[in-house]
Image (cartoon, rainbow, N blue to C red):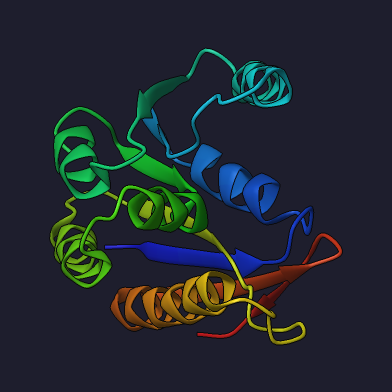
Length: 168
């Protein structure tokens, strides 16, 4: 089974890379979105991404319930793309959810997924140390989540400037 984690910075090309990889698969494709349209810019961004994906993709919105969305999508799709773990984590933190348990549930769902799955996450630990406690906690939680998913993944790719670098 193919479990792919794609890491990179903002606008690095990681989503485009993962989408192209999944589109090489035959059959139905599920796109699990963790973003929420909180303002007009996000509404436009989400609409643009849906249009770019095209009709072959079935979109599932899961800003909080990502593990169960993966479990459900694996029953009707031949491949799954999750975009993105970093937004999911921020949704969990802002909603005061147990991020450790949610991360463990996600790892279980990824390991049990019966179809190829690609997960996208930002690598946020490559810049300066944030000045406030919430931002430092977010950076740390994102790093730990990325490590857990990387361990469960068969392949890990880091994308910078649109160029993939295979890590695992």
